[in-house]
Image 1 (cartoon, rainbow over the protein chains, first blue to last red):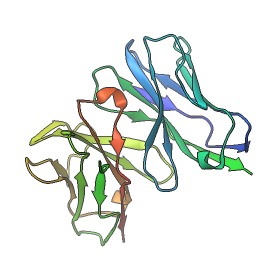
Image 2 (cartoon, rainbow over the protein chains, first blue to last red):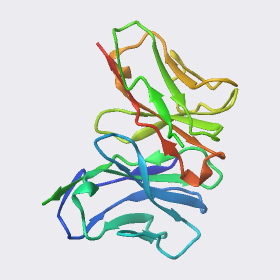
Image 3 (spheres, one colour):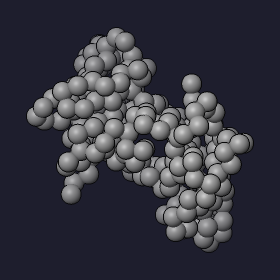
Image 4 (spheres, rainbow over the protein chains, first blue to last red):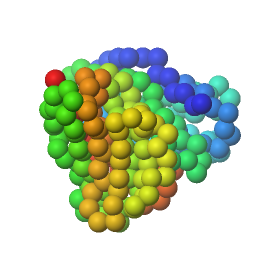
Length: 114
Length: 115
């Protein structure tokens, strides 16, 4: 079974600075997708960034980028130039290729200090 | 284009009552997924449906829980004889294709409180 682990229950960052959220996962599959979802206080889950396992290049979306280490099964999220609106719960998630189920980690609460 | 609509947003039930949660997927989406989030935890997959069919219910408890996605109308997650442990946020998501490589669109969730 696949598992996703986020070892940081809570992180804090100063506005305009950079923060990195950690995620590790376990799978026997070779073809899969990894994601970071954001859950603000409104509770709606919003897709931040997606990485395809067969791509070596790390995904980026504006201020958000990932460090994907396939051999180490590590998938961290870097948020640059942090903004107050980035404050939320962040969930790392996994889905095998052609699958229908997302497996989520336990989440990291990110606080942004003005 | 309206997003995934869930209602009610909040539902309070006493032990033993029934809870019905509704989900209208995004326009053009025929794939619906239900997830449950316990306090301070990540979302856990419950069930995946297409119109009139349950495709994967591997995350659904075997008793008291059922789901449907009829030809017309919203998807319904039904919990019979609720217990305190059913208190959670229930999220619905939809997509245009199976799994859609994880690009699911989520609703804002329905928070069930069992007294």
